[in-house]
Structure formats: C-alpha cells, structure tokens
Image 1 (cartoon, rainbow, N blue to C red):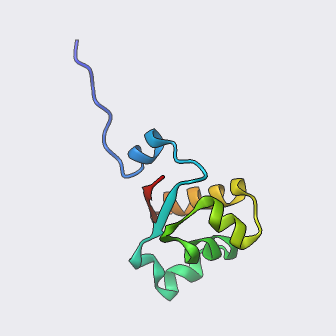
Image 2 (image 1 turned 90 degrees about the vertical axis):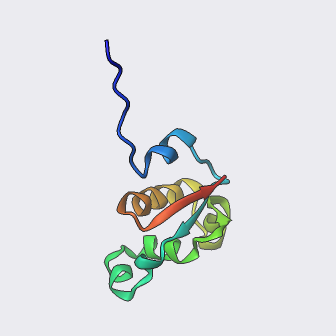
Length: 89
C-alpha cells in the first residue's frame, strides 16, 4: 500500500501553522504597483499598506479601528490572492 504525500502549495505552511493574532505578514513588492492596488477592495488595500513584516494582526486592527477577526479575514483574502506572505508569529 502506497501513501501519497499531499502536493506542496504556498499556503500549506500557513494552514499547518495556524497563525493567530500575533502573526506577522508582509506585502509582496509586485503587489504594490498602482494597478494591482487599484484592483483590491478599499479595506483590503488599507490592510495591505500596513503590512510591513513587523506589524501583527493585533496592531493592524488597532490602527484601523477594526476587530482582529475582520483584519484576519482581509488577510486571508490577500494571502489567497498572493499579495502577502506569512513571516512568523
């Protein structure tokens, strides 16, 4: 009997790590172009601009006066679109 290993995807590590409110993400440089940013919904664009590789979900939520859950949902959207990457936390 052969056990098949799941194929690696860029999101596999994030799904296994279960980052929480102390997770840190960074915006990917290619997504910072004006054209790419204009395609993002406004709130997601605000979150994107704050992701510098040092701020946590908690800090971004505090700066935008949003709940951590709302910010986390927007980060999931940005992550699935490939605009940000998980750093640590």
